[in-house]
Length: 184
Image (cartoon, rainbow, N blue to C red):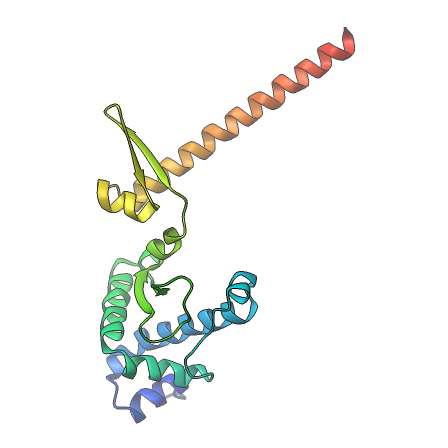
């Protein structure tokens, strides 16, 4: 048998089911990313957002697993969905329920990566059957309308392609106008 990882050793010492090791490693990586954001991301620094778990990440991982069973169960569930589907959009992520609050117990929840990324998104306006509807985020729009992420991705690509065509037409028109002006 090869060398055991630090997380694996801590799972053994703390009697945590080794079949959940993959979820634990993913949580460790997510906690690392959260800690790095609080130390280096200008937005987090300006807002004063702190990483309130143990400064040593391996111990922070165990602290979260043992300190918030509901969070850990939700993490395992989302981790299993991610592994089963193989879609990076389903990867579990740590979401601060109060965006101005710290990474701490009572202010963390589990969200699939795609929903977490969309949380800070701009308002979505949808036009259907002569009515305009307003949604506070892409995730709210998808939830309320039943539109899937893959459909949103296709729509975004189509919008980007159309905008690129419009930009090219404007540039061509501007070039033609400038050429005519120089000749005239």
